[in-house]
Image (cartoon, rainbow, N blue to C red; front, side):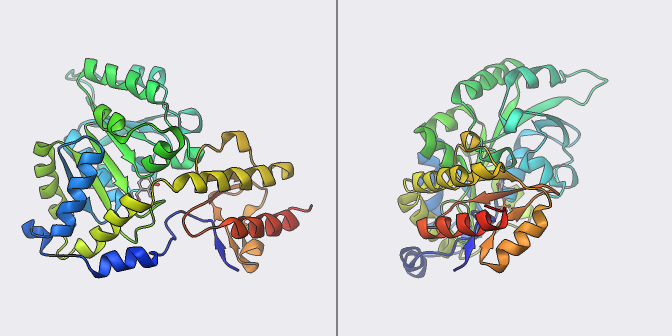
Length: 337
Ligand SMILES: *Cc1c(COP(=O)(O)O)cnc(C)c1O
């Protein structure tokens, strides 16, 4: 038995999803003529109560388009110190967007408006002016942390007061919604640009969206083409996304329950804290984790190594209860109980 807990990106399309892909009505999306892409973009925009959405190959591209829409070259973005946009997009904000970044250090990646406000540089001839703030929800490296909606509202209040843009890296906004019941439109209302991933917990093979207003979406299409993200019969991929939106959001609570069960089962070994597991990500602290991970992989259990003594495990569409039991058994034996 193989149980791959390294990421929620490792899922394979289900038979129903493959069927939707195979029967998609497609056209050339660079000409705006792909019915399946147009349908997905309209569904996503409606879900978040926004005017428009733009389909992209990856979440990184959706994020970078969002940032370029809000921040001009030589201006500044504020983000969490462990944010995906800062750490895992290969310096794209600087390399491609000319965007300067400064960071705050939130506890478990949680947004704290009081940490952010003092960082804002107001327009003045001697400073790099702050133009936007990026928020990640759920926060990946923070451990699947949910951003409390009240704190996001506080952020929106002072972003408005200072005239700053707000970008949501919502690669896992689905998980925040599944855990809290907060409507997607409540998030949509607070942010100027929203990126979402269809290829994480929702189980599509490829695809993300940048969701925003109509005017920004038009500019987003130009930036997407510039970045090499203009795709042709992309409707085969968009159909997987539409299928995922219709069928794979509600089931995320199952992933959360399995992550809770995994964390509670491993807690006696002193490697994790189940109380901190809010969604589908379990952070673990294990001395010499690389050795443990290699030994677990030999027995079919794959976990992600993120540092000398820490890593993570994620639940997703392709992990069932038997898989979790197997992982607990294998890791429990390796950890010595
Ligand atoms: C996965 C992820 C992305 C996008 O990643 P891609 O691999 O480029 O699709 C963006 N933000 C977060 C927080 C992620 O976890």
